[in-house]
Amino acid sequence: MNVVLEENITVSEFLDIIESVGFKTYNEEQVKKALENTMYMVKAIVNNKVVGIGRVVGDYSIVCCLSDICVRPEYQGNGIGLKIVNRLKEMIEENVKVGEKIQIELTPVAGKESFYQKAGFKYKPDVITGMYLWIKK
Image (cartoon, rainbow, N blue to C red; front, side, top):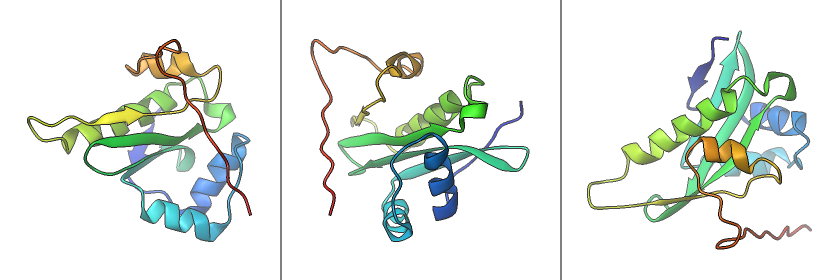
C-alpha cells in the first residue's frame, strides 16, 4: 500500500477522519482555530483519499502532545498510524536544538497503549497516569 504523507489538514478532512473513528466532533470554527494553532500536522493519503491524520500541539520548547492520531477503520492495521506518529516525531526532533530536550506526551485511547509502545513511547501506569476533563457549554 502506497501511503503519501502531507503536512497539512483541512477542516473538512479533520472532521471526516475523526468522525470515521467515532471521536467527538466539533464545529468548523473550533477545528479551524485548532489547526491554525497546531505545531505540526500530518495526513496520510492512499489512492488520493485521506485515510489518517495526526497533530502535535504544544509550546514549541519544553512540552508537546500528540493529538488526534486517527486512521479510518478500514485502513487500520496497515502501518499507517505508525507512519503518521513517526513523521510527527521526526518533525519535533528536527526542531530541537543541541543541548535541549522536549517531552512528547499523549493520552491514548484505552487498549491502544501497545500501538504507541511500537513507536517508542513508554507506558508505566504505576508511575504516570493520564487524566482528562471535558468542558462543554
